[in-house]
Length: 295
Image (cartoon, rainbow, N blue to C red; front, side):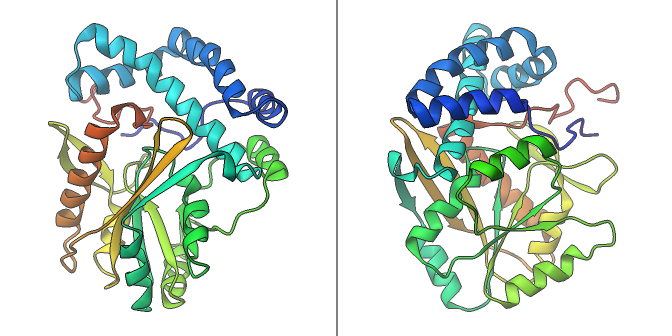
């Protein structure tokens, strides 16, 4: 079972310190502070270290010592994405550059007036995608299906410094009422986004081989997307050097009511992304159940 509790790492004071540096000295100054924060995670976050090292060494195939070095780098890159998200949402979008790869795919799908399902992952920095899409067309409306488990104090503080968001959140409900919200958004030619790589305990999952070992994925995004008869697109926003981001959008081939086939295509997609950006896997739990008592 998943040991992820739906909450991000970090605390309110840490966010405030980074925001101070971002606003008063610049994004790169916050990156400098991040060297020390990443070192703290590297030295003391033992459980997370264990599962991230397993990903780098056992699943990506890096040597023991290279995986150790990359473990620290992965924390540093993750911190950069959080800083970037905060800076961009606070009005510093022009400090970054952006590259669109497949944006015409999304434009063409919206022209069909069916809406579309986007499936992303906890890789890169998808949460800044609205700042890409809003620049391309005012027609893009994003609905993010979420468990909304972010720590309340942090979420409230980030909202207070943000310029605002056009993203609408659809919270997953036990009574499945979120399905009606999803259908309404699609009927209005909007984009509905899922992340396909995290699940909660006691929820239904699908299995697929991922990076050489069987892993569990949440069944909901693939069940829903394979039944709605709307276009499905895999979308990722990946961080590159020098405050540069690269958006990838690829339409998936969907067989109606075949969620397993859609999952297989998704796994192939995120595998390709991770081969190119190995440090941007931000699923900090025992994804492959390598340390589970039942494994």
